[in-house]
Length: 502
Image (cartoon, rainbow, N blue to C red; front, side, top):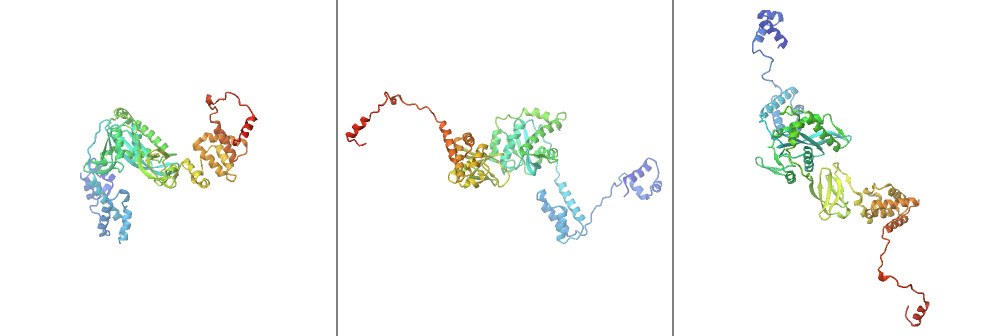
């Protein structure tokens, strides 16, 4: 096989310079047959072997095909590589080269790709008609820790405007919150939303396009008045725009890996970058306009938002003996009066709200996505100190009570005395009743005396509370004295003489 430069010399000498085959063969040191071959119009460009021999693979070829057919039914990340298949064949007794196995694997994948290739019909969408949704998994650095986040992607099909927001997981409350953020970002709601058959969206795939949608998801769809559409299974081309958006934004937003102090800071940056990219990228159809300019045209046609959807999911949980409700392996405290009672828990993307059916909201905490954490409000446990004062010294909620400096100084002074912990507990129990500001004033007065004891703290508190009582007592006119009483000891003597028992 000679190189392309030599072929060019052969054909140039013959067709341009007019030399015959013998002359060309002598000049280029080639055989006459070689010159003849490359002077033909259908001369071969490269040698291709019609059949690759696999002498040692032999009977192992069928076993290799069985492994490849088995792997073809699995997700991509679970399929074995050619090296792994080669190692497994060696365990079965194969003594041939790795190249034979690699060529067989490549040929198998090539055939599958050829069979899987299909033709697609170009899609068209009206203005404000469709928005497509999808999830992607990305790697980011949050507060110095590298971690995987789930990114919700939204794509308006007409203007190609996009919006992304990151979450710790893909649960339903995250999906609901993502829609609230996306519709607020777009400034309105499209007529239809297209999804995969997500478990958080679709409870059951029925015949054809029929779906049994999640009830809480449908509550959101009814609130915003859009029509949810689930794709045909394994037909991602039905929402091809958002599928390609995942790759595009991964390259532009997540490579290199972004680093932020918090997830909120990351999401603020993502929203800003979506706006910047839309302003600089050309619209694929309306090539004279940018994505942002076409989006401004579409924005006015989106349905206006009256109010955001309350995107929470609800569970019923029983309060354990430590006055906590367990959610995702984390403990959230409630007032001790609800121990062993069932309460309603509302889970949103960033909060845990706990409700009693009679009293309403009883506790609210920021949501934690770590594991085995204790999220508490110390004032939930303070009333328990009346019955269990010994828990004050070693109780986990009381290790770091958020108190003003003056109260902490009084606490330090009281704890140095015998029984001082009980004196401080008495003071602590007054805070929910009298208010933090009142107790802070009492402690400042006590500190000014120089000597701090439980009795002084108690007396100062009583004095302050007595000052708050009304001073003027209204006395009825009928009770007023009309004349001053006269001191007359003779009246007592007269009673004594009469024998009246005194």
